[in-house]
Length: 229
Image 1: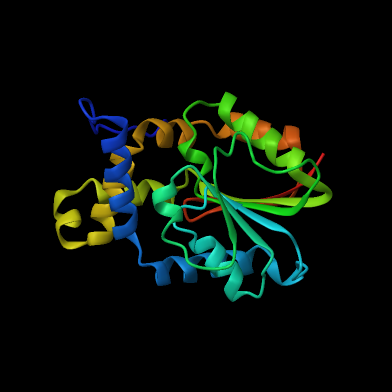
Image 2 (image 1 turned 90 degrees about the vertical axis):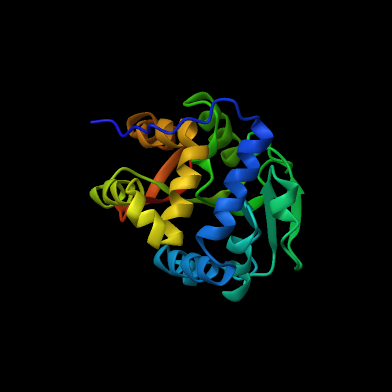
């Protein structure tokens, strides 16, 4: 059964939609909450085994709390990529940032050790075309021994529950987190539900470009680590 939305954003410009989404994103979690979440994910994904001098790229970086989490864990050779200069401007630190489209990464072939995405691929406009182009770019940039680390929304009973609750007006009225989640979903509905309902295509593309070394579905997320084929 496909997950769907009834939200209507007709009449809004792309800029208005992007602004509304970014505003909701900043309300959903404080930077400290998001950094703590990312640290927990990276621990789950085995960051303790990664070389501290690894060249790491965080793509779809947003306000760069994924980079801050990596810094807290002792990594220093960090770069971030996002299409939004407004979100990137919220970061103050030593990582090098690029305002760029992740379908065309601004890096040389075979030049980076780890590429990480946490909650960005589901913003891609077209599946499977844009995802294939992005995964192809990631594979191109990674060194032969490199790894691709991905955490993205995934259809699970937990995710269905979160959507059910966020669609209840009373829940949104008493919970700022559910209100922000509902707003983000509303303004990214086309790409978000395209992603949620495209699990077979997504899995096939991951298998095309990477050898899976970690694949786990739970709590509304897919946790994936792959080495390049």
